Image: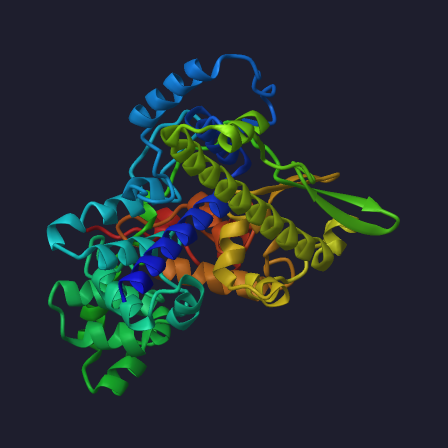
Length: 443
């Protein structure tokens, strides 16, 4: 039993590390490799010259002992600190840390007195949240891929959903709002509406809701006012708002012999080399401390190299799928409808894997540089979908602080509808929706 539990926990650590690397941008990955090289003598970044093979073994032994005593990452894969598991903890290439949803959740676990298995599983689930704070991965699939039992995952998901911010860990908008209402002790019509009649509410069908719940329209209106005070995206407060200083494309698309081929920035080169000198020292050294230290560092380097290689392959496969399905764009600039679910199905992975693989990544072609998320757009061929999304955003906004056309444009782009501010204004006028000033009501 103990062996099985330890195996599950170790596998969870590897899964979290894999998620962390998959979500990294090109700049963040380079910074990660440089930082790893500073703490692991076996890691030699491509940009650095090979380690010199001079120096007596006695001096090296002293250096290794010093590193062993002072290296905070000596147990990187064995005893990962909670903040090191956070896939969004590294805010930029300067190595600084900022507040993230993962860190905010992790700090709440200590007072709960959870055992190590539960705490580790909650951290794993927190690492699987999307930017809005939603948990959308089926537990059965997660149990199969992580090695953690489904009952354990369900129990820890309930713990996660009990934490702040209220609504975190929900599978969808309805559950997110329901969790927030339950947190404040609401048991009235508002709870029934978000659970069963959210679509009617979004369409303003108050009479239909009143008839379904056998209550008055006035009660529905009061419930709607309460629902508008809730946060539909509890994780959004922790999203980074600063702009990237410059963009480093992750993948490139070129037309060759009538086909669009994709290659990554690194090509077939590994992310870094494992030092041959230290490998040789590990093989011939008789010093137990040196062998233990170098063995741990070798495992860390090999695991990082394997995870980075998996990241590159996943990113390349996603980009190839995009290039195949959006070939019309690369030829004449015309996007076609494409969902992440369709790409995930073609690759045989979960949609969340595709979402993480393209997040923060950029593609360069002869037309320019584009975020990979740009190619998952229905708006190019479905103006009705864009209008429906616009209507939903307007209906769900805070009437005391309505969204400007620029804010609406940003929200629509995030949802896969690349509409400019002018396009939003045009659609809004066609739909007879007033501008922000005209929609504003006094608090």
